[in-house]
Image 1 (spheres, rainbow, N blue to C red):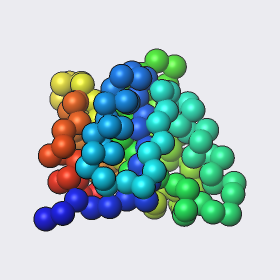
Image 2: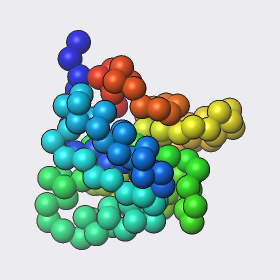
Image 3: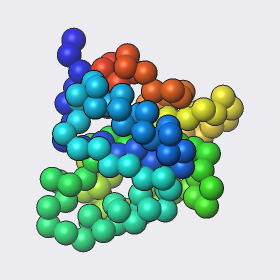
Length: 135
């Protein structure tokens, strides 16, 4: 089975090293034409809100968002709350992968309450996780 191809993916993680490593892993797996990286959930939500306002939403929106849970200012769950306020167009297009170092079973359970969270993965992102990703 070959890896699913995406037009764009977005990485949301306050750890720049994790973002860089994950970006390189995604590039190596060649699953995305474009990779957007954000070091904060607030900037990622603002990015999505800005895309909502333009006519080329489908060409710019990420197909998959890799979202960290533990971030300052706005954590992954706060991001999900804000994400749920976005337009149906955005919510239908973007599927979310929780990518976290959290081993708290409550985080896993809590992530299941969000319709757009399709997969819950523990860091680090592996080549196998990327090529087997079905969202």
